[in-house]
Length: 193
Image (cartoon, rainbow, N blue to C red; front, side, top):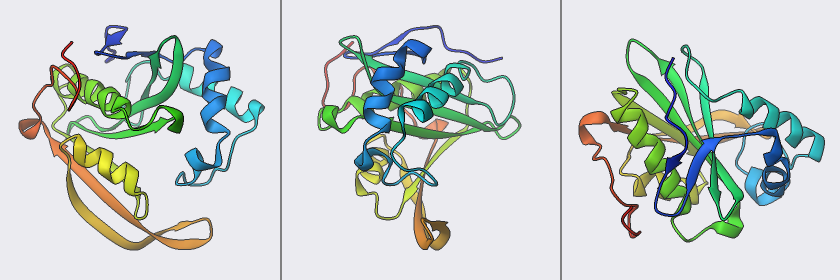
């Protein structure tokens, strides 16, 4: 089993497992159309759908076997402003996939980059990952910019590769290798820890 020592602290954030008490904060962003716009198979969530999501995420506190997801709440000022996750894709190939969802009201300050950087640091240094990938809808420019800020390189642009809300959509794939990753002591443009 692989599990971070909680909490993971950055200059401005605390990353920790999601708890049922986080429902109000998570619902505040999961219910927004602009947040779920690029998420496959979902629309704005009702409070009950967010409750089910929070309960599922609360059990994702460690990586026990391939396919498991580690989901962490990104907290600032006592409020959960988003989540970051690593999905363990292969034990033998030491690969994972990065994901993130953040409340847009906290955008533009580098907080999503800071949270994702901390999780990638843990994945490469503690979990011993060789490679981490991340994917987004071809028109999700904000997500693609975040992956680039993390130092990930665009490896592919799959044209009309999946059905998204009944239409063919492009998918952009980014990745970074352990040998390319430099553990960070501060977020890009941020303060030192």
